[in-house]
Every structure is written in structure tokens, then in C-alpha cells.
Length: 263
Image (cartoon, rainbow, N blue to C red):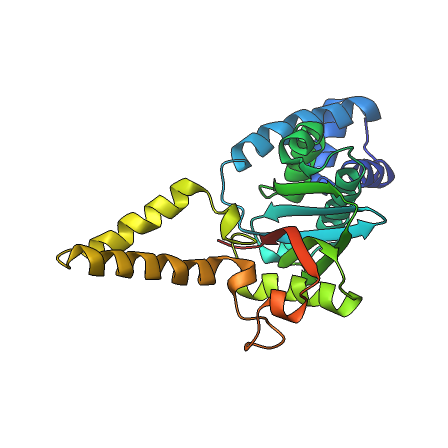
């Protein structure tokens, strides 16, 4: 049975598979369109499994705020070429909509991965690269929410702020986090085990010093470390002679998330 170019084009449009693969599937299925789709899906899944182990360090971060909800989603792929295609970015945008629609107030990565497992396999098979949903957060807040995307989607931030702060200040908080990459809001949020690890490192450096000197070195080093990793202790992006709390004394950053493409 002859396979028409029209049938091949229709199958390619429906599956996003290559022309030759579509032609072979139509021949194998005796021109049965539905069977051909099934054949391509099965083959695609086999290819996708092989691709799933490859590193995926490119991609895009998308984020949004709608009323009292905010969401951020990071979708990875293998190359920046694929990461900049409309198909990849449209899929990322659809994931963001599914993320913000969730009745959650925190991380929903595992839930979204489970929900998308079949569609993700199809995307991997048709695009030809490994893809992963790296992070997905869906927040609800009574405070003020702000999202920020930098570098064509290579960095994304969402923040939750309470108190008196204007729109410019909210954007500046996001820009600060994107630029300085703090790990914690303040030292009260630093896990005790992380502090102990840092103390152990500083204790090594203070070896051989008298105990009272060693304690001062360790405690001083921890305080300096807090200044490096805690948002409220870092020099404020808009004026490095101030901290955020000094610039906005009536505002409090409750939480933030930053997603970044690359290792």
C-alpha cells in the first residue's frame, strides 16, 4: 500500500516525530493512523528511557504571581538550543500553569513529576534530549508576592514579604537574591547541623591557638559566614552601606526560592 506524503505529514504533526519514522510506522501499521501513533509512542518511550540518564544542565526557569498565589518551575534539557525552542518553552509555561493551580503552599516537584511522567516521556522522545522537572513551588500567602526572571529564564526568583514595602522594593529583593544567592533568610533559619559543620571547619583553622583565642576566631568566622549566606546580613543591592532591614525597617522577608540553570 502506497503511503502518501499527506498521511506522513499528518502523523508528523500529531506526534512531532521525524518524517522517516512516521513513514516507517505507517508502513508497519498498513496505513492505520492510530496504530502508527501507538508504534511511535512505544518506540519513543524506549528511546526516552535511554536518554533519561544523560546530563541535563540547560533549560529554563519560569515564574508567575496571580493574586495571593505564586509559582516557579524549572525545566531542564541538555542543550541551550533546545532550551530556546518554542516547543520546549511552551511546555515549561504549561508546567507553570499546572504548578500554580495546585492547592499547595510549598514544594510540589515530586507531585508534578508524577503527574507529567507520560507527557515528559513523549517530550523526551520527540525532542530527542533528556528533560527533567528540577523544581516546582506553589505558594499561597497573605503577604506580598513577587516573581522575577533574569537572563532569558536562566535565573528565576519568587519572594514572600510581609509589612511595608513598595513594588520597586519587592523587585529589588528578587534582584538581590538573583545576584547574591543567599542560602537563608536570616541566621535563625540556618539548621544547627550546618552551623556545626562550619564551626568544625573554622576549628581546624584555629588549631594550636589558646582556647579563648580559638573561640573568638570560631565565633567571628561564624558571624562572617552568616553575613555571606543570610539575606538580611548581606549588603543591600541598592546601597551596600545598608542591609535590607535598614532600607525597609517595616518589612520582613518570610521566604524565597531561587532556581538557576546550570551546574
